[in-house]
Length: 78
Image (cartoon, rainbow, N blue to C red; front, side, top):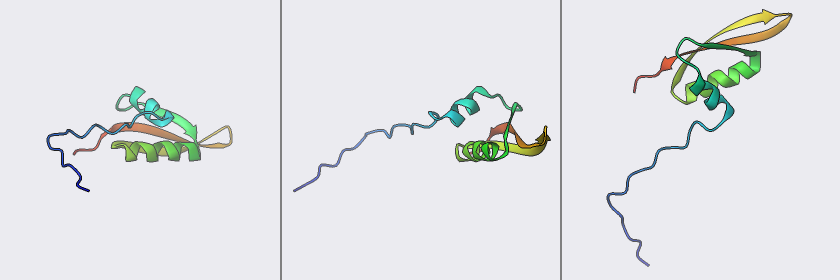
């Protein structure tokens, strides 16, 4: 059995940006921030990093609850 080799086929873009964190990230401008529960914020910051967006984070205590503020700082240079 021979498998045909195809040439000139473009690679389609990855389907990133469909999850809840990607949607939130896409709505944010550089310098915008969100305040989330601490581990939720860690998940969001990790998702940003995985998608090529630079996050900045700072922990805060709000009404005795540990929270995390996450800023969108921009995209990584390619």
